[in-house]
Image 1 (cartoon, rainbow, N blue to C red):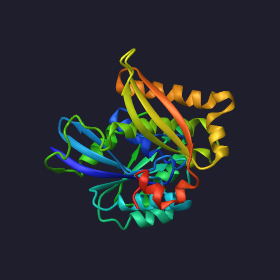
Image 2 (image 1 turned 90 degrees about the horizontal axis):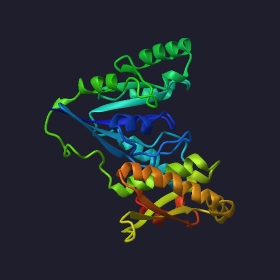
Image 3 (image 1 turned 180 degrees about the horizontal axis):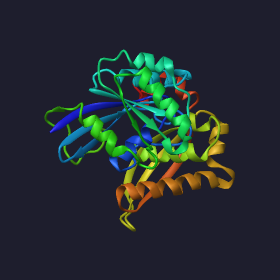
Image 4 (image 1 turned 45 degrees about the horizontal axis):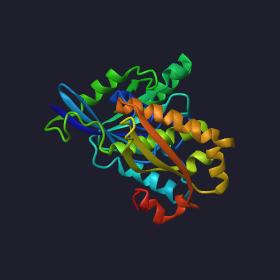
Length: 291
């Protein structure tokens, strides 16, 4: 069996988490049109008849803001160490990043450029950028994909397998994630916050699953979660006028979690203010971000 570890690496908002979800065939990571949605190096496990490929989804590269931002950049860079293959995910609409290509070209592991969002770029512009990537990364294979439309995924998997070695799987065949299900629940809630809220508010949000129980009246799982923000004004925005925003977040997240669980769940959300938690070593550690 072919086995290998791949790092999904690239700038913020390139589509790395969307690609991971497309590969796994199920949503395990929050995705939105806002950069810096991904906050952890998450291992998604792809299994088929002749391979097991472990994909490490990394935070997008960006100019760090506060201690949290610095941790995210460090995690993304550390993910390059110890993997067998680097998947450099690029947004085809964005300019070619020569500086980043120069850094990647120094790696001693195979590199595959996942040229993403090809359904959203003019043909001539796309061909010009493809040529540039092939010149800047001559040893890399370039695969055109649309993670959102799930185009080119099979070609990407085939290219990855060509660099994998024969070995023993690291995870059980039915496991798709190295994180507990509570992580997926929190990601689904956080995704709805990113999609529905504007400006800086989503970036100040952390979602904490506090506990779960069974509703004795209908036997549904009830999930309790805190949406943590940094300011009272942000709390007011998350709750919304007459509670309309928190109700919308709850409704959409509850629907997504029910689909993931393949059975109805109930979701109870509370908004809590923890001032400047993104710049606090204590709270970053408490919320699971590495020091």
